[in-house]
Length: 234
Image 1 (cartoon, rainbow, N blue to C red):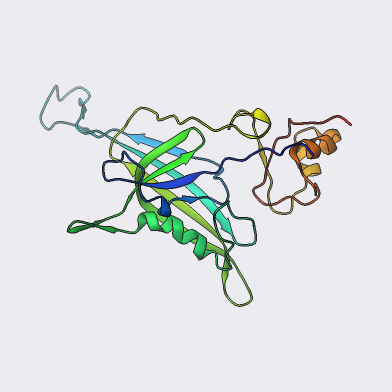
Image 2: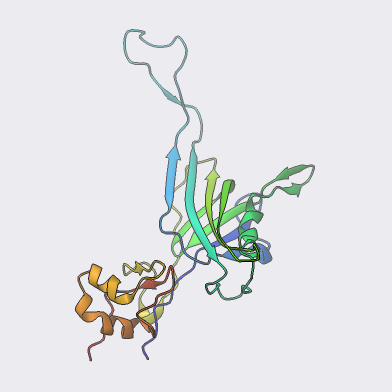
């Protein structure tokens, strides 16, 4: 059977206080489902001087700070779905989300308590900063009251605006690089036939299934990514 597309997972890694070196690998965690979008916001700190310039014209604004950069994203976790390699399959979704919540929890740093510096990486994308906000929503419960599914909205920030950081993306399955092909993401209960039809390739769904190594095209896992451009001819 053809090799399936290898999916690179986003990851959170702890940094030292100088935001330079990755430390404490036991705290690193990979996401279960990659985020659909990453939103990066840049803001310069500007100020209008008091009593300066021509009062009849537009006020002159001055740059008075280094600015800020913020990253926001949403992650999903579900104990009924496979977890990344190296993570245990849990019965309570909070066992998975606590690994993310670690990065907003203040840690002892001398005489003070500060959240750990964190690096978010996904393929060639990298963002270093501090987690300033985290919102968790428990979406599904077992008959015993255990939370099974959760969404987490993260807000990371850094007190500066820097040049883009590019990481070298590892090669994916079949020799393609991460991000070199647009991938379709399956929602709960969707089928490959429906995804292919929506992309105008309904007649080729069998060859797409074979090229992606999909054994059951009528039932896809939520969040599963599929290369609709990969086809085998029968």
